[in-house]
Image (tube, rainbow, N blue to C red; front, side):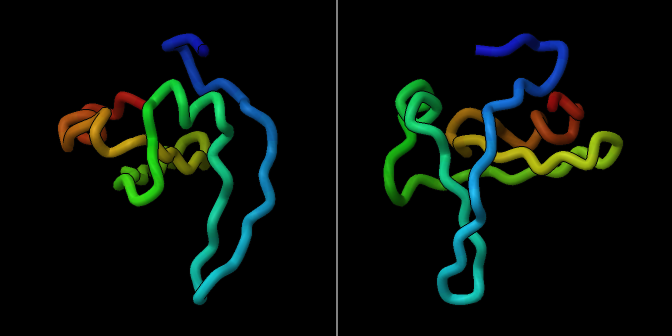
Length: 71
């Protein structure tokens, strides 16, 4: 879908609020590609140099992924 050289833009989504938390929609092609289902745990990361919030299926990464700055 993208290269290993950087972040691939996927479009935009509006944040939705429920119970004091904000939610964003994950595009269906990514849901299918990563086999994400309702209730699955997602891993959150933040890449400060690019001011980028990163969201991925938790089953696809471990703590070393974030520690190694593999964004």
